[in-house]
Structure formats: C-alpha cells, structure tokens
Image 1 (tube, rainbow, N blue to C red):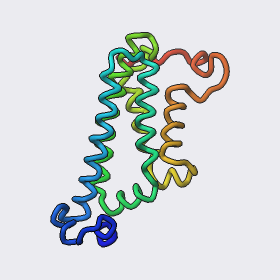
Image 2 (image 1 turned 120 degrees about the vertical axis):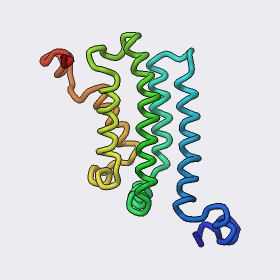
Image 3 (image 1 turned 30 degrees about the vertical axis):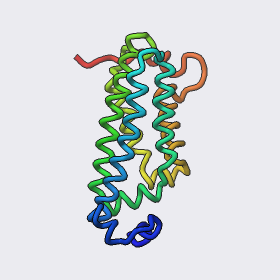
Image 4 (image 1 turned 90 degrees about the horizontal axis):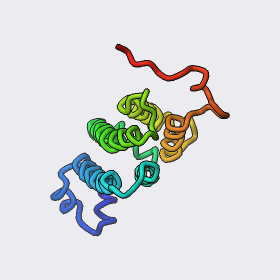
Length: 180
C-alpha cells in the first residue's frame, strides 16, 4: 500500500480512507474490470446485425484482450493471498461465459453452425472445465503458455477439434447419443 499511495501521490491514510484493506482495493479493481468486460460482451451479444461467426470471433477477441492484461504471477499471488476474491472471479467468469457463449451457441444451433447432437450447455461446461484446469498459474507455467495463448488453444481444440484431415475422428465414431 505504501508503493501504491506514493505512485498515486497521496498519503497511505487517504488510500485507506477509500479502501480499508488490500482485499477491498483488490475487490474494487476486479469489480471495475468485470464491469468493463461485461459492457464489451453485452455490446457484442446484443448486436442483431452481426452473424454467428463474426459474433463468436468478436466475443473471443474481447475475452482474449482481457487475458492479455493478466500476468500469471498476479493470479498466483491472488489465489494464495485472497482466495475468496479468486473464487469470486471464477464464479463471475463462469456466469458470464455461460450467459454470453450459451446464448451464442444456441443461436449457432438454430442457424445450423453448431452441432445439434451436442447440447450447448455441455459445450460450455467442457470449455469451462478446460479453462479452469489450464488457466491456473502452475499449469500455465508448466505448459509454457500465456493466459491468452492457453485460452486460444483451448478454444481451438474444443471448437475446431484436434484431428487433422477430412472426416477426422467424428466420422469413425458417429454422433453422440443422449441418455434417455
């Protein structure tokens, strides 16, 4: 807090008058960031004149821009020093992802661009599980990726697949069956 107060040109007492703790300051910064992200996602999601493919690309670019700002050390420190704030971030990430991408995937299904034999909510859960499993400081460091690079790779594997060539693995296995 000393360094921050000095950088802002104010006394530590003034800084503490606005933010009673480091956690309160962190929560304010995170809330401001999520408002910014939400505004961008809402603008894209609610656009009626944008087709599915462009809307998907814009949503992904919006998320990737936000991930560029996140440094693994920051996430590691927050996870260790403020686990309740980190859990809140994960909850908000899940909520926003389900809302915006769920809406988009349902639009994509209606227009024939997303497979109808796989429920949209299952696609989202797979994406969220992959993001949760890979976008953590230890795994990103182990894989030698940036948060943006990891997110992009997850999306490519889930949305485009990992198989190369015509037909890929899907042609050999057939469509997924729903449980009765």
